[in-house]
Amino acid sequence: MMRVRRLLFLTCAIVLVDTIFYGALVPLVPSLSADLGLSKPEVGVLTGAFGAGVLVGSVPSGYLTFRIGVKPTALAGLVIFSLTSLAFGFAGSQAALVAARFGEGFGSALSWVAAFTWLVNRAPESRRGEMIGTLLSAAVVGALLGPVLGSLAATFGIPLTFTAMAVLGLVICAWAATEQAPGPDKRRSFLRMMRAVTQPRFARGLWLIALSPLLFASLLVLIPLELGRLGWGATAVGAVFLAGAALEAVAQPMIGRWTDRAGWRVPVRAGLLGAVPTLLVLPWADSPWLLFPLVVFAAVVFNASVTPGTALFSRGAQDAGVDQAVVFGATNLTWASGSAFGPPLAGLLADLGGDALSYLFLAAVCLVTLVTVTFRRPAAGEKV
Image (cartoon, rainbow, N blue to C red; front, side, top):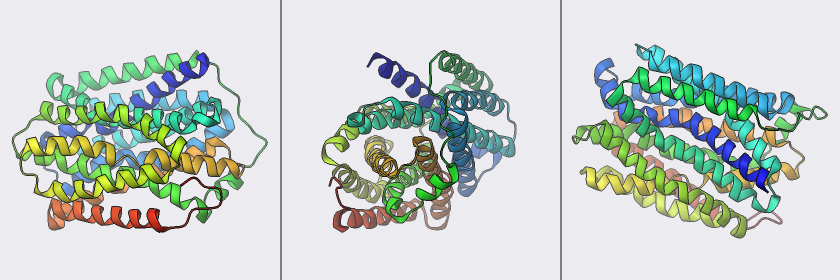
C-alpha cells in the first residue's frame, strides 16, 4: 500500500506539472491580445494549441506506453515539457507561442498516458474511481493553477518564470527515473485494441470525458478578457482560478469515490444540473465579484463528468481485454479533442454573437447530455 501511495504522489506531480502550462496563458491573455493585436478567434487558437498538441500526441503516447513501458514514456514527456516551457519563455511572436504550446501539449500527452497507466495498473480495482479522480484532480488543479503561474510571469517576467517551470519538470523527471515500473507487454496487438475501443458501446464514456474541456474552454477564453474589461489585472485573474483550483482539489477525489459507490450516472447528472444554470447566468454577470464565485463553482460542475466518464470507459475497455495504455491513449485523445476545439469554438461564437451565444450553446449541449444520461437505458450489469 505504501508503494501505491508513493506512486500516487509521483503520478500526481507528473500530471500537475504538465497541465499547469495549459492554464498559464489565462492571465496573460489581455496583455498578449493587446501587444500582438489578437482577435477572440486568434486567442482561441493560441489557447487551443495545447489541446491540439495533446490530440496529435495521444495515439503515439498510447503506443509508446504499450510498447516501451510507462517510465520511458513519462520521462520523454517531462523532457519535452521542460524544453517547450523554455521555448515559451523566450518566444517573441504569435507563431512561436502557438508552437511552444503545441509542443507542450504533445509532451503532456506522453506523460499523462504513462502516469495514468502506471497508477491504474498498480491500484486495487475497488479504488479505481478514487485513484482516477485523484489524478484528474491533479490535472484540473494544474490547469487551474496555471493562471497563478501566468500571474507570476506578469509580475516577474515570462522568461524567468517559464525557465523555473523547465527546471521543475527536470526535477520531477529525475524523481520518476528512480521509481520501479513494470515492463511493456508486447504479446498483444496495439491496433486491434485501438479498434476495440472505437465500438459504439464506449461512446458514452468518451463523450463525458470530452465534455469537460469543452465546457471549461469557455472560461479560459472569455473570463480573462471579461475580467480585464472590468478592470481586473493578471494577479486578480489568477486569484479567481486559484480559488477554483482549491475547491477542485477536494472535489475530484470525492467524485471518484462517489462513482465507485453509486456508479457514473448520479455524479454526472449532478454536475450537469449545476452546469446549465451557471452557463445561463454567466452572460449577465457584469461585475467581477459576481464572476468570481461563478467561475469557482463552474470549476467543479464543468469538470464533474470527466472522472465518472473515465472510470466508465476504463472498466468497460478492461472487460473487453484492452490494455490500460490503450485506454488512456484513447481518453487522452478524447480530452484533447474537447481541449483543442473548445477554445476556438468559444472564441468564434463570442465573436459572432457575443459571449452569451457561446454560453447558451454550451448550456444546450449540457441539456441534451442530461436528457440522454437520464433517460437512456443502462447496459446490462452497469451501475446506475
